[in-house]
Length: 486
Image 1 (cartoon, one colour):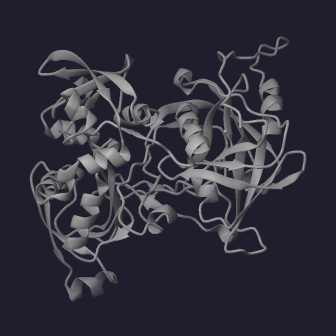
Image 2 (cartoon, rainbow, N blue to C red; image 1 turned 60 degrees about the vertical axis):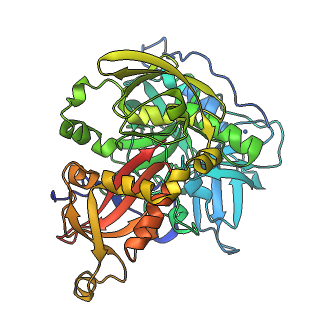
Image 3 (tube, one colour; image 1 turned 45 degrees about the vertical axis):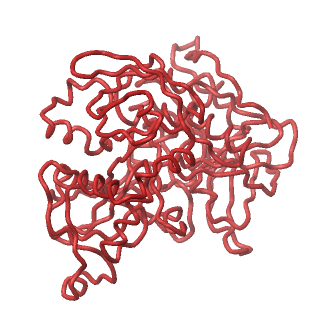
């Protein structure tokens, strides 16, 4: 197991007494998490310059956005004291507010304070743990809003502003550039998070991470705030930072607005997200290059998303996609990574037809697939409840398990867990470098007490991302992501 180098990714939510939540991925990076009207349409981004000196002018954008970014304060368990705070963005003049799921989950009361000092009690319209988005409503009229931009047109190196309420300060604006796009950092629905722990039964992790990365200064309390371009258009909802101290260190992450728009529209119209499901399996971002290399493929030569499996009775199966296909584009948009692929699918709704271009044995083909709903995909995938499906998942994992002995439990001070007894060549465990002797403690946030619990957790996943929290033989804690479809 490689030596772990710890970097803290801070929750942008302010919690009294400095409570932090973290996770370590396979590379050893620890992550901690800091719409009435139809969502406003975008215009082309224009860089505003100060004619007197030629410098980029942020003043106009800041003036446009600041009145529509709010301070959100949370109470827990009917306490009279605020337990946490974050930020939000007004997206409709009649009081719809976008924020992060992790800002408002488990709240017993939510108060929203506007920049003009008015305070409202907010109603939670809906929230989506899989994208870390939530929608609130306050009873008000003629509110200022932030116009939606187009995150697809955002370019690396482009100037951006972050607006929010860091450290419980009043409205704060910082500037930076877009450092990267389509970042996956493994922070949404990680094992041990509240959303994972509160599930009554094991659930498949359908987390969608395709963050815009920026070096604009963002700190605790910025969660749910606005990331805007120099035209004052919303291009992202701030969600997390990477830091060794829990404070700003130059790495911040925002949910792209084109994904947020679909999620927020669903929450507004249905109170929940209606997801279209394609039904393909592909390597998780963290293990993608390693998987391709072990398949004898050069990652640099794979232009698209390599499909490792197709779920039975799925939209992908009906369209004729096969294991080994490389999906190169969706509706004519080229794909550069699996994170882009997941985001593009997550923007679709059940019944949507998408055009896929794929490469198979050196030949390019094109198919149309009509996406199914999550419920239909699960009910039609009857094999997912059979021993045959479980056998296939175990084959992909490439490992065998056994209960922990009392000696091992005592050594690591554990009440639960199962031991990895054997790792098979070319399986996921082998590709991720998980050695025999590793202890599996959680799968998708649920404690694993025996091999039967593993069966239940794997079968319940259906599609999405399996996250495994483990203890390596040297005692270090690690998290591994295993994709089984989208």
